[in-house]
Length: 374
Image 1 (cartoon, rainbow, N blue to C red):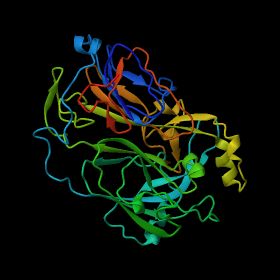
Image 2: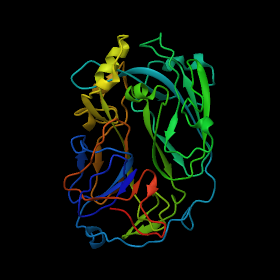
Image 3: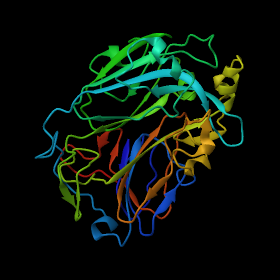
């Protein structure tokens, strides 16, 4: 992951991902996939709106700052309550411009205290995929329980594919919950498996199915995880503005933000999707994507609102996370970017200076606290 802050240049984001801060000098503006065409990686984007750039942002000097502690003084000390989520693995269709609905696999959030583990109770969600997978927002040192239920497929009921959840880049203490089927457990149809995590390192991550992952990742079983720092909730003033939400336990408020967006990049070769539905093989060495998507949407759908009716399939929008970004002057906006495709991308926003402040869930500071952001 890479984090970016306001600067007088526009650095490309490496495909590993990033957080970006930008200074916006005009009225509210929309950012679409055309703006993000060259982005890739795992990360977040921070936008600062309007007006003249403060001198400290016009020429951000490399500086030594206090090394971040596990939490800033006065930060939240209480252990956050446990998080319980239930995801089902199934299939369905999504909308891509210029063609018939595309067959995909994916996860759907069915978290509901009234639902028990009876598979038959969850069958109503079969074929109702979410693309991309639901965002998992967690807190530092929070106990996270995620139950994965494999409810099977509608488009290909003959397939008995298992599924897993692999939290990519997460330091898991034991292999059982890692989601790599060779060293843990895969979930066959009509079965549940509970995953347990206790995330300690704040930042942006990604998760995906690791069973037959070449196929299942391309089919759409991908999503974003982010871990909020313990510093959240502590008012810290940075460059004249006070924040209570941060990307990391930075100690000085330099990663503070007011609004955030998540952006999952991927590319789609529609042939393996169509072939799978038609019970035909696909040679993966022939992979050649013909759509590039953000949050499961290709332009012009990227600039539509979350619930735009043109994206409905059977009365429901399956691609419910909009990739449209609207910011106001002087807002400090965090964008979390994740690249779960097979192609590398670069990123620039014309006219919007930005600064990478972290990569792959790591604040860009040296062990002595030296600022390594760019």
